[in-house]
Image (cartoon, rainbow, N blue to C red; front, side, top):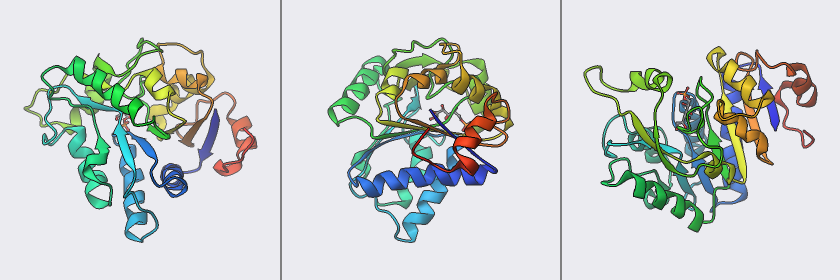
Length: 260
Ligand code: F6R
């Protein structure tokens, strides 16, 4: 696991954006795994800014998002379909038919989850998977005690996740309690995982993810099993790492060295 620590959240977000754009430039028809949430907003802003300068094209890129709420139509203002359209897709040259999210409003969400997993596989698998992390250690919506071998499926959201995401829904509206999410094994199947965490509220989860123990109580700790993971943190999110000085010695100021 490569742990890159940056002085500011802005620098950390810039690093995550750069890794995505480097992937797209190196392999224009790559398959990106994308995430939503507050942390990713600036990442997508950076990408849109670079696209507008002519620095990158997504014309041949395919994307698969991690998750979607069960019961929400793509047009729902709080759906992740809407989030992705507003934050990224409508601003860049990605082809709509090449963007994929789980079908939260499917009549049979269980079958829709299986179909999503199969589509990722038949498309050739994800080259770079962007990830955030929940305060409770979730990745995607793989809540604590999710099977470490799980594939795309329906998960019940925890109170912690419902509270964190309540702000994205109207106050008089009931928030979905279920989501279709790529599983932990689905995420581990990506060829490169890039996880971005900023702010003190993520410090405990980041420490558990990186320094263990490996346990289903912190789903992100499963990334310790992956051969190629880049964790990008700001100082606040890195503040509870026992070996922080070691990571800074290997990667001064977040420098992305080959040896890790
Ligand atoms: C959403 C997702 C989640 C978020 C996590 C952090 O697609 O995969 O795992 O990355 O809940 O969310 P924020 O960035 O809002 O703290």
